[in-house]
Image 1 (tube, rainbow, N blue to C red):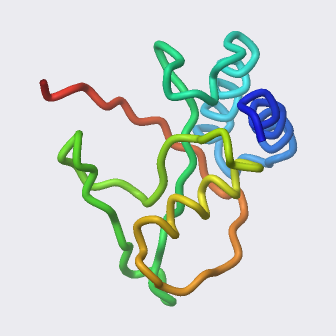
Image 2 (image 1 turned 45 degrees about the horizontal axis):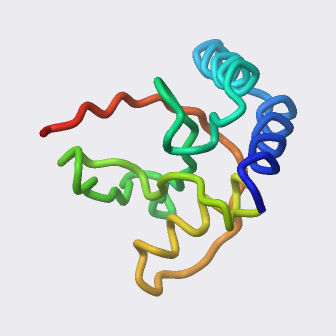
Length: 124
């Protein structure tokens, strides 16, 4: 699938998703605005911002979260990463990001549930 298809999928997912809080609604609207303004918003080369997809992994009672150390940023983040041409949807990209880093951990159902915005500044 191309970034154009991912771009369309991202718009559909974000338009259909019901944000649970006013802060999440603000982020949702900002991502839709980014997608409207930039045809390449799903590509890592898009400047100043671009979409990524990730998975937040909790234990069953939601008291702990599993994070991934981002090599470039040297900070802990949810599992995930950049959208790639082979990704069919945002959820596919999130699942790929989890599978690439989880090394055989169980698969599970994914669904859109949260928007986040992070700023990663280069350490070089």
